[in-house]
Amino acid sequence: MNTRLASACRYFFKEWVRPLALVAAVVFPLKSAVADWNWVPSGSMRPTILEGELVFINKLAYDLKVPFTTLHLAQWANPRRGDIAVFYSPQDGMRLVKRVIGLPGDKISLHANHLFINGQPVTWSAAAENWRTYTTPQEQKEGVVTLEALGTVFHPVISLPNQLALRDFAEITVPAGQYFMMGDNRDRSYDSRYFGFVSRERILGQANAVVFSFDTDRHLLPRLGRCFTRLL
Image 1: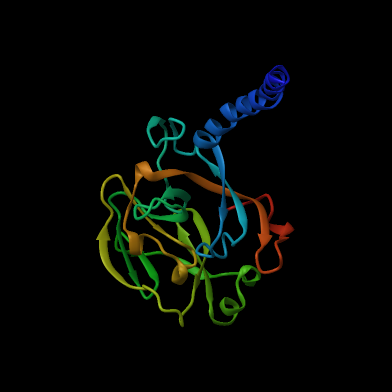
Image 2 (image 1 turned 90 degrees about the vertical axis):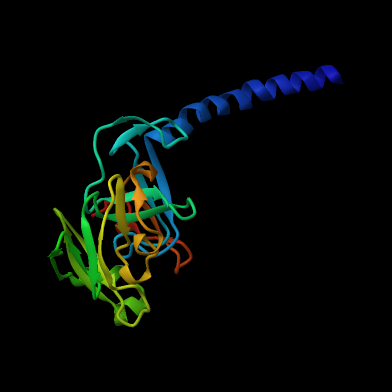
């Protein structure tokens, strides 16, 4: 009996444990340092990113890190204004997806939900109606969708005038090595307005594409038109 058990254990290790361990030894470090994905559970980045979407994270967008750490082996770029960044919250360590608004040294203020950067108002214009396809019924009824220009990035922003939210703050200066993040769904985003600046070391990479999209209000039916699309 002991011989049979030992033989079965050896077979199990050889045929199952060892191959899975080899796969894990390759895949997990790659996910940690090269490329990853992130399920989006909330609507804080609507209409750019929707609940139930799997977004691709390019972890080599800015640097190369030691797998499973935030230690940099090499760095070749920094987040740019307008990038959609993935980072660890300075408040509770949760992984978040937000847009980079303020760079180190920038002076940022918000007046009636209108951004000012280094004393200049951020350019905005009316958004095309097709963006409303990806808004909730309340947002379609009450929301105002505009296109905001951050550098060369024109992206949609939702404002909800009837929603209680932080729409004004006096000018602040982003410290060296820190970044100011905000969600595109401005009145329903918990971001740097509340938890403060995000240090460079906490930024994991850039979210630049929707891989899969599932409608959480319709029994996870796929939104085929949003799969494999680039993020603005």
